[in-house]
Image (cartoon, rainbow, N blue to C red):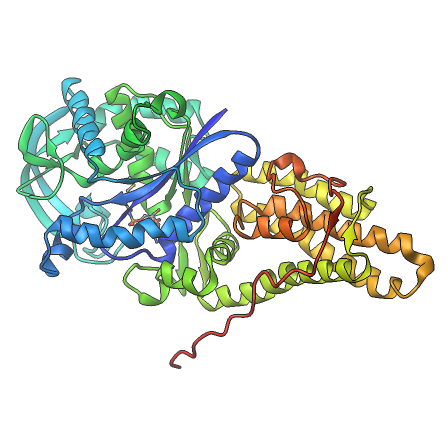
Length: 503
Ligand code: MSP
């Protein structure tokens, strides 16, 4: 089984926001889990560099676009690393391999007779890099960014999207899970059923972008260039290897709901035209809202790298997974990052490990083998049985909620069993062995299950318990703890003293 997971490629007109981190985290949780289940995976992320805004920001800063891109690429490359995302390739649309592939791909569409020349006149939102009809605007403004779009009138090349309406509907009817969740499927399907308008795939008089192979006076429209990254990367990510053979069409595209139409309508039509099979799924998530505002890259408080500096990548991943229910929009706050860090990661998980290892070190010095008590075994089995099902249904939030129930159950077990009391009575030595073993076994299984969410922390838990670092899902089962010497572990999530902020 092979699995190919992608994030959108991000616009680099500013440094990454926590909103951009969100898509990367969700995709990485999903792919790490599937890797635990033995699948061969490939994870792609990267940056979208040919947008009009990039060109304008570079100009404002008095830089050539490529000079600007060299600078801005640094924090964007750091984003997946700092989020502990297991990326296999980081694509830049200025890569020679991408540029060559885009030209070849567009030429195929052209040769198939799906491209024609016409005058485009209409509205263009530079922030979306999207064309809008008057009807689609809200009070004359872009419905996503609430800014007045530019009026554009130029000779362009158009893609015959309208010719693909029937074929797209056939795909949607045959594959009800092509777009997820179902409300997004319905949204995309009704958009198609409502009639498709051809779209411009080029920009004239724009000096920034990939020149069209049949008319070098025009460049590819940034979306016609960007979407193709999902295929182009496979052709040059591993020199000498064509990864399309293994990973296409096994693609799962993770996207925000704002870019659904490009992925669920334009991209499949382009693929059909160029003679490619369609991806498996387009998984659309909602927005993190602070108050009722979508988080924007230009707000310094929500800079993803500042947040990973303060809390660490795992804490930000954990917060992304739990802050809002995956799929829908949700309102959250920056304060909730600190709250979850302290209460859930620090107390529920971190203290549990500190207490467990401290008690084992103090009373026994080692953990032994044995059967796990029925209540803890059942809690572990509950995770083993439910989490794969939840993640197969893309429920990134539901799955971590379920794993956290095991963590809470272990905390309850400590409180109920009171091992420090048992330890006072030599006659209860076997009982103490069993309770300590149960705690170690529960924590070990929880760590393996948590590893897609907390990839840096999970191995630390396993090491503190003297257990194997094998993260295979089969290890989420009771009674697999092996004998080990144990010392009291340092805190997993030490308290963070935040610099005071202005009121
Ligand atoms: N460059 C295009 C994508 C091209 S893919 C072929 C683009 N880039 S983006 O930088 O604007 O945004 C990329 C992703 O970030 C989207 O999935 C978007 O939904 C996500 N997010 C940005 N802010 C967000 C929130 N506040 N909440 C959740 N995700 C949001 O679009």
